[in-house]
Image 1 (cartoon, one colour):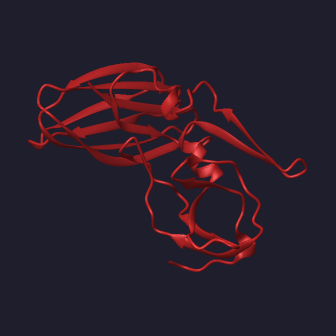
Image 2 (tube, one colour):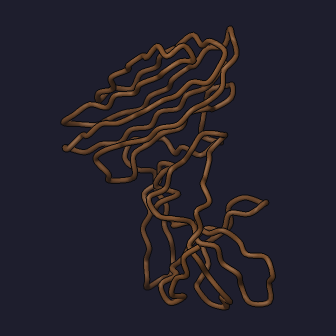
Length: 204
């Protein structure tokens, strides 16, 4: 792991066995290093644009992982603002998008795909995979108000056959019959006039 300057360590979110806790000030730090650890959400990859940071606090032996507030919570559908005067991180839902935390998913089943652009980011590029059994169905719930472009979601089944879903500026749902095996997905597109996109895939 690459060593970093402790003075450059800003507020973050601790990812531990009890989940997400509150932001902390960069004081009392014994050591810190960039980490190549990955983040998943309900088993689906949640790629971050900034690496996690492994931090060992004073009087503690085991390091803990921290993530950028902007990066992580932006992925979960929140706009993040920091008020230096009040030393407060403020979270608001971004536009008309529904926050994408696990408790915000209305559908029943196992979430295997959970994608969104960063707040104020006018493009998306995500990929991943999930396992399915015969007889299962993938329910896609798409929330979108993107403008000036489209996004393509490609699904490739275990037999190599590919399905393409083109997403515009409307909310929609789709159901896809699944065969047993590994399914891969790739989602990419540019919407230069702005907007937000969230895609939740649930297996039933």
